[in-house]
Image: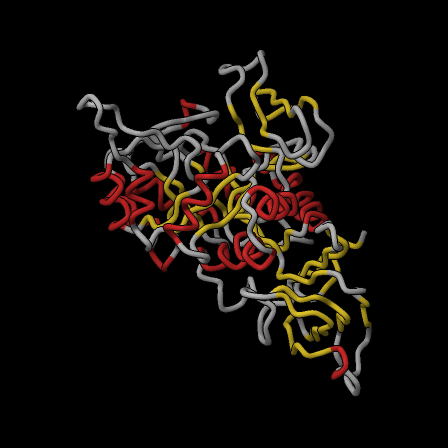
Length: 393
């Protein structure tokens, strides 16, 4: 007896969309894919008629702070609610992103978060956006630290049973000594918040940093030292190295879409991801919301979060109002890519960054039964995690 069959679906594969297909789910996995006409004789506890809608692998967000009225940094209760909210936007798995806190306090907070009881979107690890950065952006500057192996080890221990994924700046003094600790066991390390030069970036890449998050945003070029000669820095070093993947906040303001198109040319179809970097208030009507000690404002749905006039740095970007389903629609609209490529950028490519591309990010036999059903307008209708329906419109 199969647990579930999704029938009459247009399944989105890496290179094409196949119409009038059935997907059989059993024990949390995809047990088979066939034409709808070949489904006869397959017993099922439940059959969902997709009515020709798009069925795609669950969306994966590599960089996410919060949404609605909930924020990861607020603690386990908010994180538990976020796991429940995210499936309505097609997200089946994500990296909760934690802002830096003073040494000791950061590990204590992370240890509490790592014990959360998850219902809904799965946690794939914790993304630590700091403290090993040189530029803060909207992050609290007093929380940035020094090259401290004991602090790295404490954070790794606090994240268990999940992995800790560190974002670092290549120009952070001593980072090359920390990266082997951060990437032990094959975990990725992300590059961000930097004004590193080419040599610094290449050294960090060789030491194990092989992904760049919210690429282009808070990635400054080095100062010009020879008039008329445009300096190269982290952006160029990353684009030139095919080992390094990148992700973008595709909201129309954080990064010009031409930069994403250029990255696709440099990295190929499997090397570019989309994230939200969503902040508290994302998914809600435009307005003002509290972000830790600061206040952020969204001018329009899906637009960026900006610090208000009450903040330390008024008007500065502080994450986005994106949801992953909107990021997928933006890929189709702003980048003019086809739906299979947009799905790669919001699912399969992220799974590859995390080393999970043998179980997530694809509709194929043996893969996790993490699925999203979209209508013709690419709006989420239903979401399954491990074969269980966790959202139905």
